[in-house]
Length: 471
Image (tube, rainbow, N blue to C red; front, top):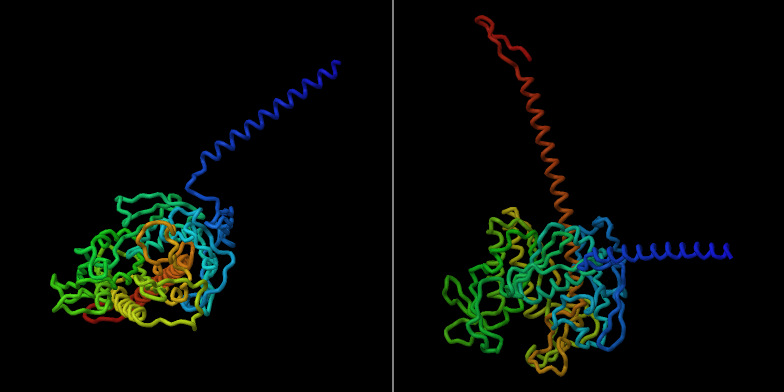
């Protein structure tokens, strides 16, 4: 019996030891989980969400995007026009859903509000002469570490910023560090990267006010001061490394145009003795004033990116007369062309940008163009239409063929942005290399001059005669 009893004591010791180890492991695990910052998402995990129809949909992890990936630019990218191309299928998209990103505006939350199809999320942009890499959130956050990026413009600009937050949510969620409760002026901070995102509401990019909230078309009547900057954003840009400007759609609204505090015309004001101008009249002047305001601001040394406007896709009527956007797939580039007011607005943007780019260069500033007009012209399938609210809601909302579903085609703007930041890094490296060469050349020239001085004949006076000797 003793051996049996001894064995029982050993087993009890073993069990007691095993229990202690298990308790220790559980305790350490709980401590580790407590210390993990919950604003960060595990990037390697796929997430399953449920759409309005009840079907589970898997959110794909970023393909071949290790956190340690080397940031590089293919040799042909600096020669390739990435904005000229076609949309091609991307079965790996989307990379987030409405259940995994809280930044989606309700009116662009197409999945939540029952849009039945999902193919509009499964395309990527393929330039004609190169490949545009799918957005890598790790690379982006490394590039913008310790920097600030601001969006200035209208609600489509806000749409873009919210898309970027969702694309970055695979790595980290930002915290709200806004200095005001006004949602039109938000600031988001990425703790691990010391990176700040900000949005500045300025739909006309210049000083404006709204004396009549109704107006001739029930969309308000505005006073636009075409020669005055909007200090709501221009006074706050000095600390920013990058600015992304957009504007255009609001210039179709009834407005009075002011210069030197005098009315010089209007857009559909329906007033006698006031010249009614096309929307491009006000837009050209406003854009020039805004860009000039950046150029003349002594404290701003960042990169300014003008994002060209994204065309609307109303079919079957105007926005307020039953127009809608119900297409289910992109156009091919040979199936549609830019025309009418869209073309006029685009030409105005391009011409004003070219003028400002040259002037900025003279002042040592960098102006860049994110030319998304043609790619987005091909995407009539990407708008919310009526899927920005519940069908039974008693709300006065028209079909939205201006903004973009999230997730959706607008996520590609992050692909463009990352590419542009990489190219900016390449330019900076090449400029530094050239400056170093000039410095070395200057040093070599100084050395040559010193040597030449050493070889200059020295005149020595000896008595009454001078002799020239070579030192």
